[in-house]
View 1 (spheres, rainbow, N blue to C red):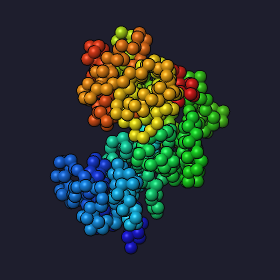
View 2: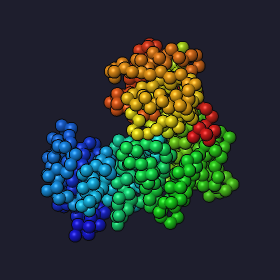
View 3: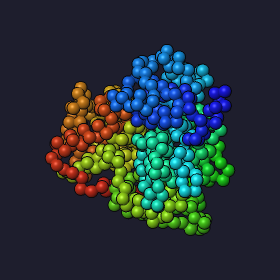
View 4: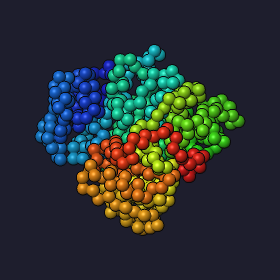
Length: 517
């Protein structure tokens, strides 16, 4: 009976009353799940190891119960509740004891995105249909591309919002009484893994989707690179109009080729080279669309120019790729080229994403603390070849050897931080022995960046760039990548005075070079 009932739960207006749902984890996402289910009339038990005081106070107010304690095994309270559905926060890996218990007992296992899709019809557009969904994933560039695409849609006159892994739960947007024409949904590999479990009568079917790139990351969560790849590939499942992929990353093209999509969906490629029909790319420094126009075999639409992107601080090769991907998604919804240009002119990158924090004495200091894996750091090094590179942190089981032997070998020097310094230093010894390497062995967080800046200042000369692109997570020594970046910026300014950035257009290589993508 449970499976029959769950099959009918594909609308906000379905009968959710009394459905026993266990919500695992209590963060912003977990609370949005509990709040939604309580509003629908479900019987909600939240199980979490710890809960913010405000959430703990609000849960009984909205009609949900809270259990806190160790989840190293299945607590008796959860087992006795006998949930019909478990909705897990993205942090719960496939091998977590409670997730394994749910799978072994054939309990429906959802993420917040699955729930959001099922109730997406709470607020409808004027034509009586829910908002269209545009999905974005990739090892790197997700947040930038999500923000770009949402801004382009808004500039084109659509009511749109960036949601999902970017920070605003999808459920909050679905329940917004003002409604939207489109939701630009950033999805992590964790969220996609949960989507891949579903055998729903109304599976998530996006208007368009993109996987920006694929490289080693989150292997400790997925267990292997192959499992990580499989999770990412779910972004294209049931796509109806446009499967956007990176022509410079063969893995994303294979995902599209293997995807089960709605008949009529098109493959739309992008890269930094000259585009073919059905692609977006660059022609003589002009960013063009040859995909979304009638005469695409002989014509192209100009979206912007590389020079204009440079004036906006968006000319680093990987950022140009993000612009192309976002433009492809926007063009799939008929956003005009002029609106895309307007959106780009108003756009600013997030803090800690190739952010120039100071120029002083001929040295440029760049914070790319958000480069938390080797693929992201490689993009940063491509934008700033020959930099004094600040690298290291918590490697999350990822090998940095390829990064060091490739982009890292061109660094002027390496300043290594973090608990996994030994692996990074060994990689330089094996693969880039000519690069001078300095270790920061500060025991206290407050001392790390002061030592980094002192060492960097001793190496860098007029015309050099000091680049914080750690290729690693921050949680070994810092509260977050943002905390790491802020401390780096503070240490730089402490040393040089008030040296604020002059503008947003630090030197970067010509993005027409596909090798820099």
